[in-house]
Image (cartoon, rainbow, N blue to C red; front, side, top):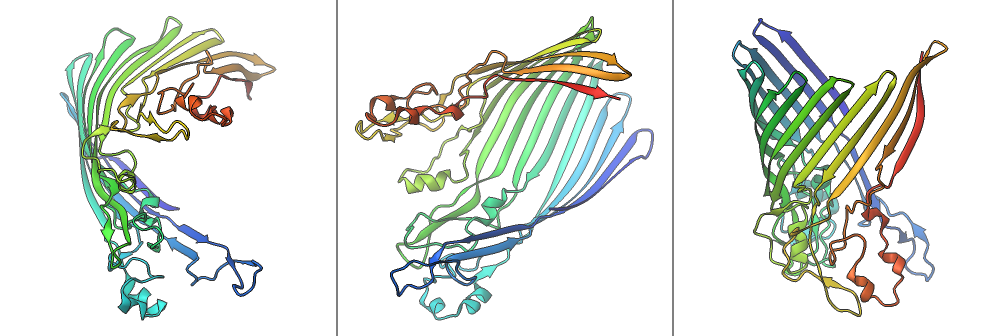
Length: 447
């Protein structure tokens, strides 16, 4: 990735602080995939060879997407309030390619008889079009208004852009839609729009005592052009169809954060913050609609909790320092992420189905962890020495970050009763748990 960036700041007047900047990015993505083939199909001996560039078993591409942005911001400070107003322009071009005729996607194996009579070079001249450039203008404004000598109300509103993941742009770059896959073909889309988020925040900062303050903030994020997959695209062959990534889904995130902070005094400081959040949308995975079609399920039409919808998070940190000694402890409570429950059927095989159970309708167990840090600072032979010990997951908690769909727990599954002679170790999944206790001991030297 090549990056060129320039930022400029100037105090134009005593009330106006101007900022401006420009940034350009150029990426280079190289992709190569091939299947080993037999060099001679006329004998019985398989002699492995790498296929040539024009062979259907070989794919190689280089894509160079471009990004460009420019912004300007004015911070206006008056006696009664402070205003930040900004404007940002974003430009993006995937420099990929899109199909000129969506009904005949595979240049190596045309479906239309007229295209079959053309050479590969002749097809390449007519097969693809260039994607369009994407441009977005994003306004942003923030206001801070003092309501007393110790309290400030703040509000912000802004538009934000997020470039799609490159894999969604360039997946299956030669659009190899095959009869063998039937309707099970999924291709990238170099003409995807950027994801657009409109964000609102309103809050209050209030000093309670000389060293304790509170910040309460409510937020709402409306996300449009969330990437999903298209309905099946028919082709000239009735038994061949495919889906592609499209901007068709939606999500929103809303919540409240309350944070208390005590500055260091009387040998200790402390911070506590709590966040309540709801994250909902059409889907968490861009390929959800495609997977539903492959499983002959009706496409989802309701809003569901997203995979990262963690309703409650509570963090607390206490630091105590006396002389050269110090200790801090950090606690974190997280409510469980959603998961999709499963109903176990076919006892002899242990297969499972989702029988009318809504996706992400249940919650994994909550997780509580503590981290501890100790240190001692002193001077030794004109050097600053710091001895420290850090203990992560102090209580060695077994946080269940992934669970079995039939039990909702990482510790057991009903497959234990249905798989008979299967190796029981298969059901032991260490990656389902958070990291166990970890201890670091060391020292720092300063000269």
